[in-house]
Length: 130
Image (cartoon, rainbow, N blue to C red; front, side, top):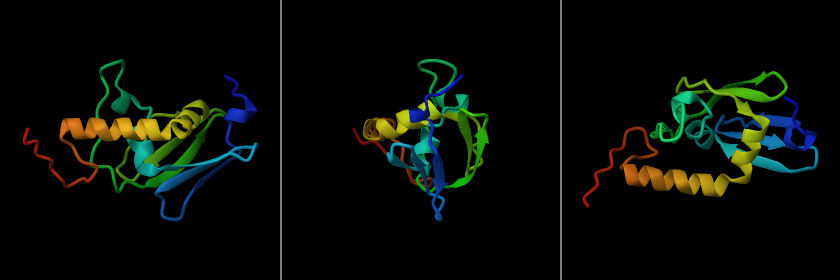
C-alpha cells in the first residue's frame, strides 16, 4: 500500500522523558501525542478486539512511557511501551487520525473510563456510589 507524502511523517521524535511522540510533516505541520494516549488507543487486537464491541478498555496507563519505536515497512511504526505492550502497528494514516482527532478521542476515552469506574492511575480504585 502506498501512502500520500502528505500523510507520511518525515520526522518522528520521542522526547527525552519518553512520554511524548512528535510527528513532523513536510508541510510544516507538527503533532505531539502523549504515550498514554497512544497506549490506550493502540491499534492492536489486544486493545481493539477483533470486531465492534470487543474493545478492551485500557486503564491505569497514566505513567506509561515509550520504550522503543521501530519502523515497519514504509507504512507504519511499532511502539513498545514501558508496560511491555508492543503489538499493533501504527500506520501513517492511523497516527494522523489520532493526531487530528486527539481532543474528541481523548474526551471519549475519559468519559468511557468514568462510566466504567476506572482510573488513569494504576493503583487507584474508583467506587461508584450511584
